[in-house]
Image (cartoon, one colour):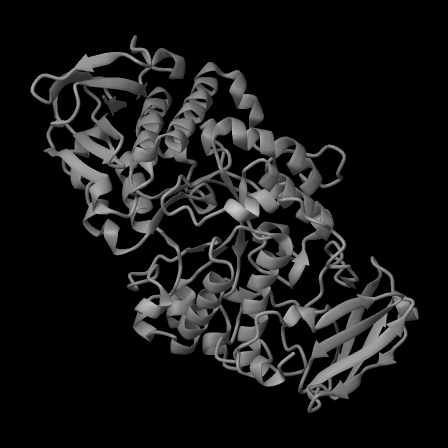
Length: 596
């Protein structure tokens, strides 16, 4: 390893040097602890006795070679700090960790699994001109595993049950909430202790690799939720690692996050090398197809607060990391969860941006959900909450998210947020998703939303699968299947997402009737979407397209098979007269047409 590069934040594969590396019947352990007075290896390989590690390379790294080390053995570093404390730490670069509440690192052979996904890897792209329909999920609570005492759904079970489900429902990517080892289940993985260790909750390193490999062999991409902002405070992990604030800021004003965790000191080159190597580790060694980076506004601004100013060193770190990743892995997806108004998040670094492929459109999400929460009588007033997104849409490459954050902590589920009584929520939810799937931008939907769940997500419980016994929920999940597949199969709905030619308002000034009509095209195919989001039937709606000879119905949210009352069928045709068509729209409904 280039040590000067490590100190200056230029290393992207530090995990290949630091940590535990098997070499035949022995292993080499290396750890970075520059301020430590003494470091010992303790573990199963030496009966948990102290084996002193030697200072190497200017005394800031420690190293030891041990014979008789085998995969699966546990170990820790006993670090005697300059502050007089002695703490047993897990390996910051360890490839495996014990299941909580235990915290020893576990020896793993990083290269023992052989992938069989060459075909997928050779054809994958960042999906800018392709459909991207992401199913966000928490692996442990999707479906109960009765063979596990905690009920966790494992990597192995996921490969067998989740993949057919994703294909059936029309999702071509799955995004997994953080799986780096973490001590607290209800942190959902966002407060990590083992950044290089796939959590033992769901299986081993190779189990995870096999899951991703199997997804790829079924044409499903896998995105990892990556946490580069902060880490858990547990003293066996990164906190005060060598008796000093090695990974965190020394000043508590910026060192403690809003979540009670410790903020990474992105100004330090060693921290930059740690984090960017971690990002590349998941992409290189596990074949993840992308990273969704959490809380990027907390990297852009000090403590996520624009009034405190831009954190220049942190933003430079993100730029350098993203630029390297896109150069090395050009087909992977880099998505920023960023609620700020900071400009050029999705521009290339060389063009002055942060280098992400996509930015979550939190403004669209908030405006849309607030609109659908609003009583129908006020939608004439709030009409342009649904048109506003296209005023700024082309500023960034946006992704439309209905994520886990929107279905927890008293916010209500997506279906439950819909205004009105129980019966009124379903037609509105169907219209909402037609709007989402036909609006420019890539899509993300959290697990359970496709079932119209009314119970908020709980990481301790599986999804409410039994609600599909109720006809209205069963109809809704069939609607979501059909809508997703229509999205995947029609280039007009995705190919020109980020080109102004791909979208056109045909009518966005029906404030009193609360009707919206717009067009999506890839220049070869054209689709027209008509929405009535009032609680009254709207008659004699004029569609003026000046294209084609007829409109063929692809989907109506009011079809009886979806729980509606309409008698229309897929394939029904409306003839155009002088480029115009006239139709009626039931309350809380939408229709999707193909122009022929």
